[in-house]
Length: 410
Image 1 (cartoon, rainbow, N blue to C red):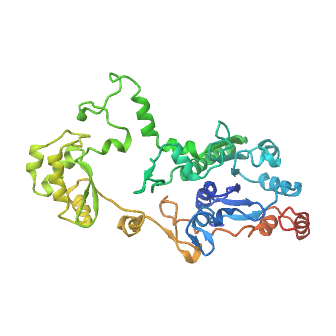
Image 2: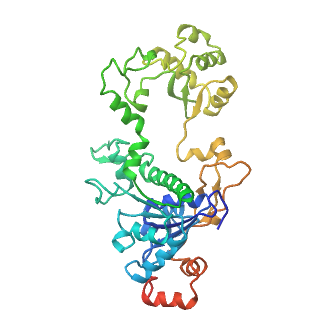
Image 3: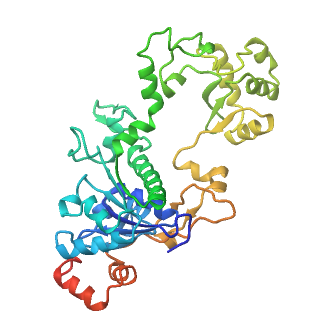
């Protein structure tokens, strides 16, 4: 396996679909992640779009650098193999409906009996408890549950799912991976593992904590919770909804696209005005020292609208760098790949190696290149190799397991 920060850590992962990203984060950092699949494999290989050389981009991304073993856990022989894998592992991931492994006799207690240091983490849609715990769902459900985006309507009046950045399906696995590493650290120090679970819906809500906590804060009286002094203490709508009336903190059209202007500090506003030789704007509207967006100042907004149209987005970014003022690019998921900052910071794993061009985990370790990832495995691709190399099974034992149906191909 490739070297990385987590080299020497072994994870046994039972996963389907997007939640497999939890083990994917760990594999990206060099952990040996052994993905246990049922006969027929994880049908996530056929889900979503695009399909690249017969496999979904989703599967190619979240399962890269893992090893795949097929076990039919309906057989007692396969359950024993699973426990043998747990015996020397650091953690087990259950990325399915809560209790899926326990229903096959693989309880946390049974795992702990063979490995007291094992860390067990279950990730599911709505978690292991609550009225929705058994509700079938997909990734977008967690974002709608959490209120991350609003319904949209087309010209014919039909409701549709608008374009949005997926939250829970990625945040849940990321938070779970963070918890697993914390559990492993404690287990290595104390000799005692733990059992944890995380819901992708919970993670989607937590990632939107600023809006949720703001609405909660606004339940308190105005005497205790106000807006900023620069807003004359008026309460704005929580989160980015409160940005709509901004002027010195707003998006503007450039000569060839858009830029984000963020001169809410007086210093940055002054630098901008000096840079365009329009100190008259600063003299007339100097603003406050901090957090002043010049809200609802339509006269100033009209002036800035015309000014920003005079240069290209790249010219405005260069201007901001030269004059120490806050101007940012406005990209799309398609155009960001052409952004020079993206090209400098992000590492691509090429399709020649991983079937689809995929982005590396955006973690920079000084003096080290990103781990050399491998393509996502075919279902069961490493069954024999893992049984032989990791568990030390000989050819006769592997053949007996295959004959029993434990490996799903009797």
